[in-house]
Length: 95
Image (cartoon, rainbow, N blue to C red; front, side, top):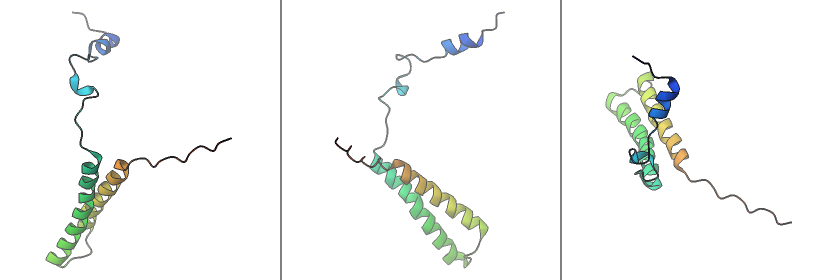
C-alpha cells in the first residue's frame, strides 16, 4: 500500500471551478446596511439586557452581567466598525 506524499494530497485536494461553485465570486452575501444594523442590534441588546437585569433583580453590580454585556457590546461595536465603508481618500495634489 502506497502512502501518498504531501504534494499529492495538496494537488489532489485543490477544488476545481466546476466542482466548487460556492468558492467563486458568486457567493451570496448580505448588503452592508443589513450587516451594519445586525451588529448595531447587538449594541442595543447589550444595553437592554443590562437594564432588564438591573430592574428585574435589583442587582446593578455583577461580574456575570458585565461579562455578557461587554461581550455583546464589543462584538457589536467591532462589527459595525468593520462593516463601515472606507472613507474617500483626498485628491492628489497637482504639480
